[in-house]
Length: 182
Image 1 (cartoon, helix red, strand yellow):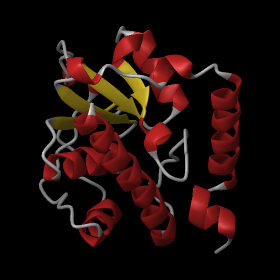
Image 2 (cartoon, one colour; image 1 turned 90 degrees about the vertical axis):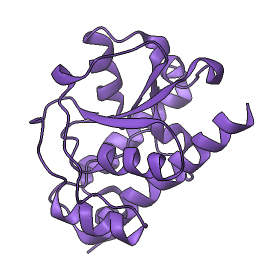
Image 3 (tube, one colour; image 1 turned 180 degrees about the vertical axis):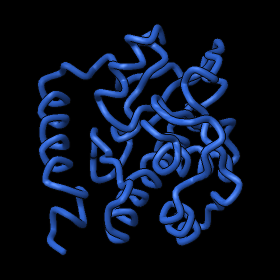
């Protein structure tokens, strides 16, 4: 197990993280970095399968008192959380045993939703699917360390699951603090 596998999941995860940070530094991601807290009614966490990252983020936000849900851009509605996600979430005090995935096609956008994407390509896909740009932000912008791209841990090591969920936890905590302080 090397540093890249533990911290980024794979070499592809590292490359996507570096490309995301470069886009962030260049200012190209600025449309996905700001929000109007007074207009937010529900947090909607988004990833691809809604069985790992967004499932954990949504459940964590709910345990912290936020109105939240999670969806996947390409999943099967009703799918359970991945077993490694359930075990890792438990480590963080979050229960995913009753999680049931929701596919984007079964999601209804309502005024006041803010969709929190795990990856730049997810944010762009949400735009393509008709979600207003003012309702899409990149969750990793709130993470410490800063991580615009939160790589998918699916089928990766236990160590990367812990790193990934630590990044998500940091981002959710900071995001909620910002929302409550506004």
